[in-house]
Length: 258
Length: 246
Image 1 (cartoon, chains in turn brown, orange):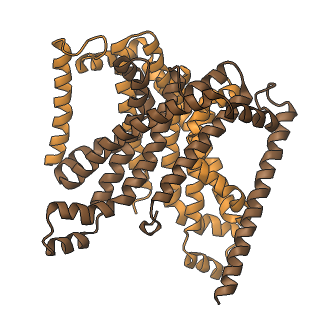
Image 2 (image 1 turned 30 degrees about the vertical axis):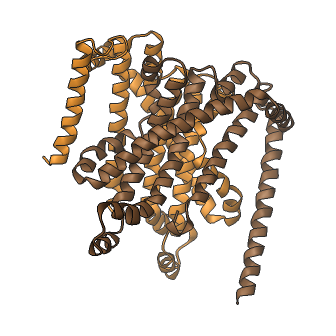
Image 3 (image 1 turned 180 degrees about the vertical axis):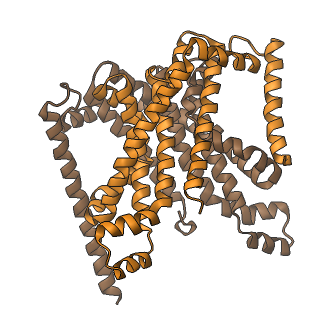
C-alpha cells in the first residue's frame, strides 16, 4: 500500500512542478507580448531582457548593498523596538486580565489604521534620518506582535496550567515550562507579520522622504524614469522579503500547526 | 460600565490631559506637539477651510469602488479556482504568495502606468483587496460540507442551482469575511497612496497640510483619519456579524 501511495505523491508533485513551470513560461510570454505590443507608453513595461540586464547591473552595483544594509539596519531596529513593545504588551495584557480587557479594544481597532499618516508627526519628532524611518517601522510592527502574543497567552491550554499548579510550579517555572513553549508559535507569527509591516513602514518612509535605503533607491529610479531598473529593484525587494518570511516559517515547528 | 472600560477611557483621558499640560507649560515644544484641545478645535476648522467632508467622501468613494471591483472579480476568480483544479494549481500559489507580499510598494510602477491621480489610487487598492477576496472565496467554497452537495445531487439540481442554492449560501461566512478584509485593505491602501502621492482625499490632505507646515491642522487631520478608520472598521465588523451571526 505504501509504495503506490509514494509513487502517486511523486507523480502529483512532478505534475505540479510541470504546471508551475508552464505557468511561469506563460506569464513570461504574456509579459513580452504586452511589452512589445505598444499598448503603454514606451518604457513603461520594459522587456524581460531589459529587466534581466538591469538586474545584473544592479547586482554588481555597490549602491545596492549599501542601501540594503541601511534598510536592513532600520528594519532590524524597528522590529526590536516594535515587536519588543508588542511582546511586553501581549504578555502583560494576557497575564493581567483587567489590563488586557482595558487596552485590547484600542489595539484591535488601531491596528488596521494606515500608519503612514503618522509620518509627518514622526518627521517633526525625529527629523530626516534613521529615527523617523525606524519609528514608523516600529509603530507598524507593534500591533501584529501585541495581538498575536495576547491571543497566544490567552490560548494556553488551561489543562496544562492546572497540571503545572498541581505540581506546585513557581511563577518562573510556569513561565519557562508552560507559557514559553506555548507562546513560540504565536510569537513567531507575530514576528513574521511584524517584519512584513516594519519593512513596508520603513520602505514607504524611505520613498517619501529619505536619502538612503532601498525605498530611496526605488524612488530615484522612478524620478529618472529608469523603469527596467525599478522593476529589477522591486524583484530584489520582494525576493528579500519572501526569503526572510521563508526563514521565519522554517523556525516555526510544524507540530504547532502553522 | 466595567472596570476595564473605565480604566481604558481613564488612560486615554489622562494621556490627553498630560499632553495638554506639557505643551501648555512649554515642557514640550509647541512647534512639534499640539494641545489635544487645539486639535479638536482644528478639526472644526478643517471642515470649513479644507473641505474635510468632501475629502472624506472622495476617500470613501475610492475605497468602495475599489472594494466593489475586488469583490466582483475576487468572487469570480475564487469560484474559478475552486471549480478548475488546473487553474488553482497554476494561479493558486502565485495568488497566495501575493497575499504575503508588500504590494503597496509597487505604487511607483502603478504611477507610471496609470499616472498620478485617482486611477492609481483605485488600481492599487483594488489589487490589494482582490487577493484577500479571491482566497477567502476559494477557501469558503472548498470548505462546503460534502453532505450538502450530496443532498443537492439527490434532488437532481443543475450545476447553476447547486452553486446559487447550496454552495454560495454555505460559503457565505467566508465570503463576508473576504468582503470585510477587502474593505479594510482598500481603505488602508487608498489613504496610504493618497498620502504618498499627495493627491485625492483625506490622505492627500495630511500630506498637503504637512507640506504647508500647518501643524495643528495636520495633527487634527491625522486624528480625524484615525477616528474615521476606527469607525469604518467597527462598522464593517458589525455588518459582518449582522450578516453572519454564526
